[in-house]
Every structure is written in structure tokens, then in C-alpha cells.
Image (cartoon, rainbow, N blue to C red; front, side, top):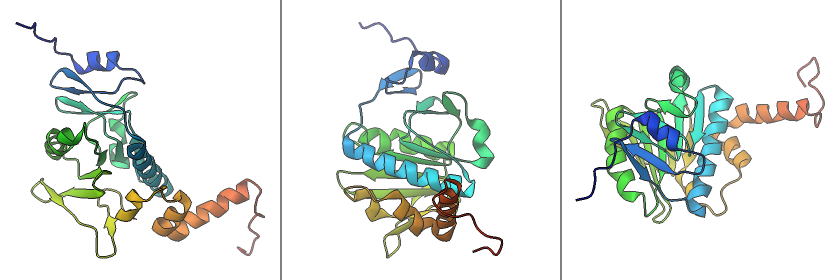
Length: 221
């Protein structure tokens, strides 16, 4: 008979982690995960930059990408991308998020498909994570789930133009087709579509501060 594997507390699990270790904590067990593929990372990077730029622009909260832990109940998961709104920023600790994010994105790989669609789906739903995106690069299919009034995930499809609108990140939207574009869309072009004049004004102010444009005169020109 094999000896029972010692159950780890979450603190013991975190103490064993370093920046090069890919793992999650479930019911006291340390589960190793596989490195991401190039396409997986491209989609993750694009969404991290889009969501991060948008939330900073509007002061909505904070976006973090893996590897960063999120502790919910008896699980310590490592979402590909997570968003936490300003009301919940006190959940951040130095090495993990102590409680649910408001939006979680998982980019599916062959190795992670069962967890992402199974255990994680139900854990995130039970934890009250208001929005969960499942992105599958192999099938080029995105599933966007939002909690309904009964606290259960409901699939929300993009509209007729292919636009998906987030409920967790106020005002944020994206074309689903952007996720499959090779190479990934230019962030500035995409942000100009999503955030419009607000982002354009920020870009202009940044160029002025760096001396690439003249300072605005007293008439606002």
C-alpha cells in the first residue's frame, strides 16, 4: 500500500512555490500544471494588456495574469487572467488573492480542459466569481459565462456583430474574432475602438508630457 500523501496547508503550499513552479492547491494536494503554448500565451498577453489598459484608464480595479494564486475555499487556483474591482482590492496579499476575483479568464489547453470545464467551473460559480471566460484556441471557441440572479453561470453569446460585452468590467467589450487573430491585434488600435476618445486623449497627454506634442494652449487648442 502506498503511504498517504501529506496534506498541505495553503501556507505550506505557498512556501513550496517559486516563480518557476506551475501548480495549484486543491483540498490539501499540490497539483502540477503544464507550461503554456505560444498561442495560449499570445491570447493571455492580449487579454491582460487590453483589460489592464482599460481598467487603469477608467480606475476600475486591477488585472493580474498567471502565475498568481487565487484562494477560494479549499482551492488555490492560478487563473490565466483575473480582474478585481476597486471594491475588492483589499483581497490582495503579497503572493495571492485571498478570495474570489470579479472576472476570471482561463485559456484552455489539452492538459487543462477537464479542470477548466469541470472542477474550476463549479468552484468559480460557488465562490461567486461574477464572470468566467473559457477561451479554447484549438477550436477557436470562446464561452462567456455570467452569474444570473440564482447565482448560477449563464452562457452569454456575443451579439450579431461578434461583440461580447462584459458585466464585471464596466463598459468593456471586445470582438471575439480578435482572440483568434494572428498576429494579435495592435493594442492601441483595439483600445481606440473600445475606449474611443478617452483613450485617445490619454495618448495625446502622454505624448505632450514626453515632449512629442506642444503643450495645450490656454484656449484648449
